[in-house]
Length: 71
Image 1 (tube, rainbow, N blue to C red):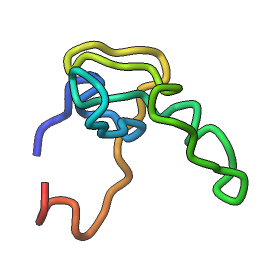
Image 2: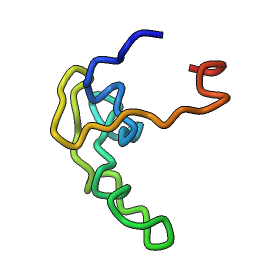
Image 3: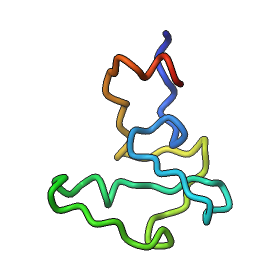
Image 4: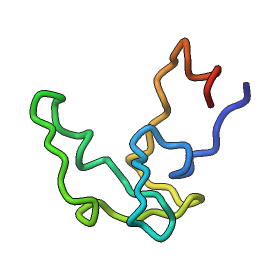
């Protein structure tokens, strides 16, 4: 498997959203908090992102046994 482009569509922080025109929102604000402190906000509070945009917060997905099987 080759290296992924650092685009929003490949970011571990991506959150899918039916309320976004691109179906994608940035979850960096949500994932920045420790798991025990995460509370989901209205989807409109998360930034709409474009599939081929990128930013300095981009993160690669953690390796997973099941990831390659289902993605």
